[in-house]
View (cartoon, rainbow, N blue to C red):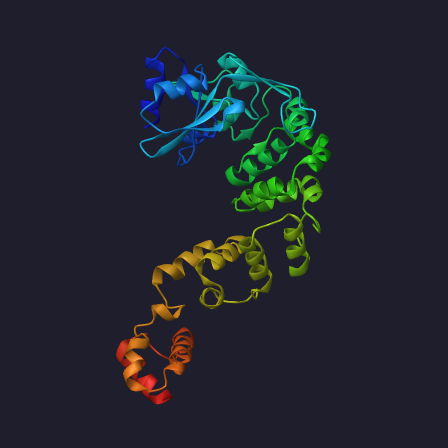
Length: 351
């Protein structure tokens, strides 16, 4: 699909390339969810070229519009360079009409500074080599990249957590040197990056390796081996980071769930999504998948009977829910088989 968008821009006499994370994920064989295109065409030209499609001015002051092409959003940005980052976050000046090379040289990491024109990769900063070597390397001088925008430090850690890449030594040193600038980043942005990082397969080892950086923006962080000492510390930290209610609930469940609890019991108490989070953090994902594949009941709706089956057997509807819960407990405990006839007999005994 992106090839059609690129071709249409090129057919009108402009350069256009897929760029950034979408190219990185393409090289890694990962699913692509966000399409970013850089081009020599200014936003007004993009609107003219795609006049038959919705073009939204999502970031017009930065030279960016979002094209919705056959129901897929494409973020299209004119080549640009940037000057000055007095607040360690946003450029003081954005200059449009730069060359492709200038545009790529302003980006954060080499793996995010690769272009694809639909046929071949354009990779002047050798980002593809770094991807193949599983390295996160800052574009140009690492100190400059992080002094410009401190959020790049968190992005680098997040990529390490998700991809399992090593951070190149000079890049890692610069992250540590400029970590104090993280104080200018809003807690909402910090939490957004932290949430993605924590969901990564390699979060634990990256957290241990870069604890000195993480501790700067995680309130109540304990040490390299344990992020939080207690549920109260975790919840307090998440609230200070203005975390969403779901994230706070997951943290509470993680600390409340018994260490020796079997997976079915966890599923019964917390549901699949929350149990998956707990199992991921405890290294039990494979065991969870095995339990789910067996389709063992862990919620009332998985029983071979429902309230409609019990209704003709009793005049008191208020007890139907508690009866189903009791049946589920017996099935989980292995006292009763999950078969309709057997469950109905059990209902008669209960009544």
